Length: 96
Length: 492
Image (cartoon, rainbow over all chains, first blue to last red; front, side):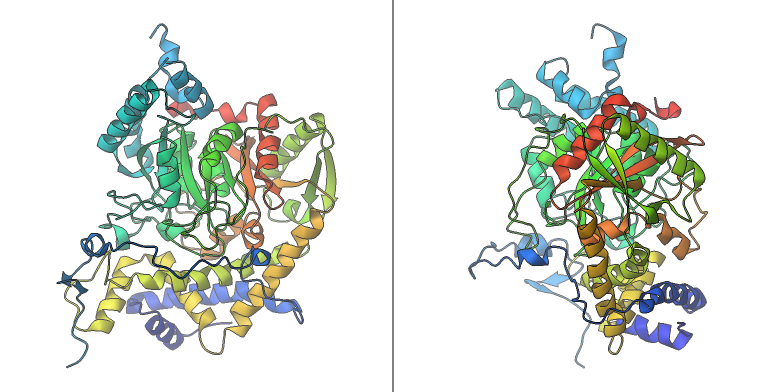
């Protein structure tokens, strides 16, 4: 399994990850090698095998009452944000 | 102090220091000053710590001494510790080894940190690690490589490399680590210390920066099984803040630590002793197995027929979960934000492009690809099915044996730079540890000897919730051997 430069660019776009043009050849090589490693999975028949998403599936999902359990810590959390104003997080303008 | 040797606190285990504190032979302030001085002397050379919290440590040590004077001390009160920089620590920089979080002062404590604070430990600082715990050599850290105290040209293992090297060089009596595919056990092996990854769900993951949520688990990294048992006692338990934390009774891991090993059935997977294993590592491990026979154990050959698939499965599951977890680093709420973004997309892409290092980017890309439309069934679903088969192998094995043993890693510590350009060969360093995370089982690594002057680790794997048994099995070995008491010459 190998990926080409265009595929790497498309995946990077999906991941919102800027990668330098000069690094693309090494991503092509490394990611293709990783996918070759992963391709060993194909050799095993897994028909009828139940997927395991979590090591403690038999314990089930613990649920709790739907009640407020957190106190408001907005000021503490926003104190470490890159840009805020009057309680909201600021990002570059989205709508012209 | 009456004699000079009693001042060599770095030669003491955590258990021994605890006795000295209780006997009033030393105060927490004295211990804390002692270890801070060692950090000050050696950290430039080893690069174990990203942050040293000296002022905070001395204040906490003073408080611990006061607690002891008022008769309220527990076994851990006043003992110094180092936390891996993956655990959120309120008011203290928590970088996760990344440029992305270089400016991040956590507004809260991880549950592990809270619990250990309540037990009275004194944090000396935050240890270096592979960026977002993605690596097996500690070379992917934004803060540079950590050096192995046994040979400063070598890597300490990873991702908890700073925690392992800090304990090996006795800059801290004990530390915390996390293990997603071997990140406690592999560096413990390469640095000649003892580390345990508990059963998935034993220790809360709240406030532990997430890498792969179905695999991540925290544990202690110390000088001995006894030390790890002491610390683990204060780390486990149900946490409402982590929905995967399990509602099982907590145990005192010291209670059965001295239990004799007569009749212990040790399984030896043939897959762990095959091609790819360094001959010298193999012979050290086999010698330690002979020691277990002398202790009354029986060695039984077993098979884990799907274990060869654990590396491929892991490199789907872990990157897939990582790509989802790391989507939170977007430059909006905390951490790094790129300069002068022109629009929202530019801000996301450049923040992440500039904030993450090469290995993290590789894994985000692999994970994004594996989860993208049209590929989910072929990769993530297939990997989850194989994960079930890998897990069933262990289930079958534990019907015949009590514990499983083998090498922790196929080789001893390699040179810095040797594998950094070859991700695949780096990944194979975790070939014996990864299956344990996929199954969610507890596993540990203990020092078993040396090959060419570098430490070799023996891995011990147990059934679900068998931490007490693992620590017992490790402790009995450490009572008849002294590999765990060896200290690298330059730091003795």
